[in-house]
Image (tube, rainbow, N blue to C red):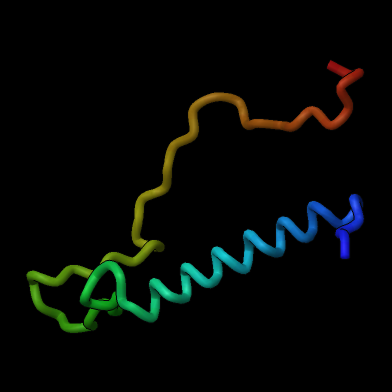
Length: 76
C-alpha cells in the first residue's frame, strides 16, 4: 500500500508528532530533570519571602511615535 503524494506531508507530520509525544511522555514518566516539582509561592508574610504582584510594577515610559502597521502599501 502506497501513500498518496498529496497525503505524504500529513503522514510525515503525524509520525514526527507521535514520536515527539512519546519521547516527552516517557521523559515525564521517568522524571528526567528536576527532582523537586514547581510549587506555588507561600503566602507567608515573612521578610525573607517577598511576593511581587504584576500590578504593583511602575508604568513604562515609551519614547517615540507609536507603531502603526501599514495595511495599504500603496499609501505612504
